[in-house]
Image (cartoon, rainbow, N blue to C red):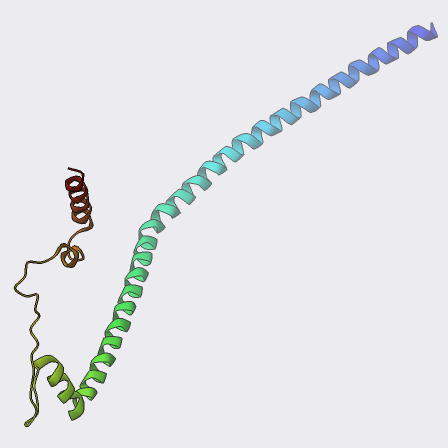
Length: 157
């Protein structure tokens, strides 16, 4: 009989333990469902707010970045212009020197001082037809390649 009572009490204990576990699982599931439904609404609202901020700030940010690029470009142009102004001021200062002006006149205008004799050299090749070696540097590379192929072909025949 003691054995039946122990079995009965164990069975009773297991049943009670199962009921308690089932109650805990049920409470946990209802809490999770309640939390899930709350988080879904909060998450949707948060997503809506974030999307609204992104849309609201996208155009001004694009304008800001664009204007910063324009400012940087204008600063670069201003620096280049000030450098050019300095170069022109230096050139103006050099042109105030008579020796520099005389040197430029001699080089570019072929001027000579009174009492000097000026000579002009004529290139002896002016009347000749241009040679292939002289003309090769002035032509595109593919023309030179085709001329080489043509010359190689005429040598074989």
